[in-house]
Image 1: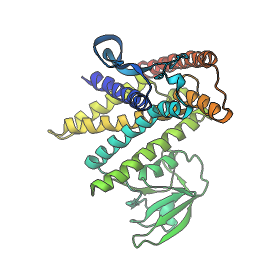
Image 2: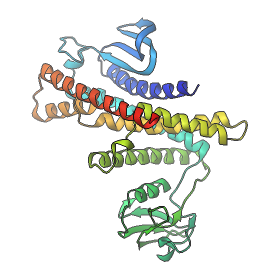
Image 3: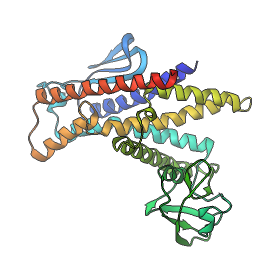
Image 4: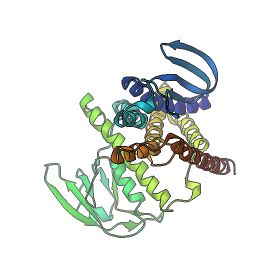
Amino acid sequence: MNIIFIILIFGVIVSFHEFGHFIVAKACGVGVTEFAIGMGPKIFSFNRKETKYSLRILPIGGYCMMVGEDEDVDAENSFSRKPVWKRFLIVVAGPVFNFILAFIFGVILIHFSGYDPAYVNFLTEGGAAQEAGIEEGDRIISINGGKIYNYREVLLNMQLTKTADPIELGLRKPDGSTYTVTVTPKLNENGEYKIGVGGGYRKSESFLNDLGYGALELRYWMKATIVSLKMIFTGKVSGNDIMGPVGVGGAINDVIEEVKEESPKGQVAINILLNLMNWCILLSVNLGIMNLLPIPALDGGRILFLLFEAVSRKRIPQEKEAVVNMIGFALLMCLMVVVFFNDIKNVFF
């Protein structure tokens, strides 16, 4: 049963990404020859106007096949014949729809599970924050000049802290007054540098509150994803810390089993659903940002070509772009193989 949930998560995320390309392509007058949910052999399909809509047997994604997408087609509804701004909107729509999906799920999750504003709910006795004069009920609003909204952002910043270098915190008192303190993290018994504060979750207050913190939930996961990518590219994480689909599937399976054991009777289903929704947010944001990277074969690579065309007013020949994309795709496949075997090693050995 768990494998079905895992497959559906990946299927929903990728299908919504492709739906973004599809709906904007239609709005821009580009013909779509096929919009598919799933991959592999076809289960059934139907035609409406110029488009074939199909459901395929492997629920691991989907695709949107457009007229003139990979070749120069001399037709009014051809992608290749549309102005650069329309092609840009079509290409960027996929990642944007991933962010929209994450926002929608974030609003639902916050409504049922609450949100985590960066209030100091408790202080560690003798901790760095207590010694700096921070009090319970204060709200952390910045760390080293960067704005903070969620308590998890405080945790994220502390995870990146590997030394006892001083940290500048901006805080707001319950009466609305603000102040700034410098806190020097202390090494705890686990060998981690901490400032000695704790936060927590609060119940949803209103739909408008849900919308606001839904946007902040999206912001948090985008920030966490970008920070993670920086750490990967700068060599601050090892290969064992990187998970592919198999590793993610294993982690989701562990979460489902943990929820089954710890949830009160009668709440198991809703708690599993909320945890899966949290994974959907994380993975959808990851897919959106990864696709925006300027790598050939990804949406970001195509966006780079379009920006070059917009600035130079010269279009890169499609055959040359196709070669670059083919090379990029081959390199991505090699990377996926490496990540896949890394997943297998981490899961089974």
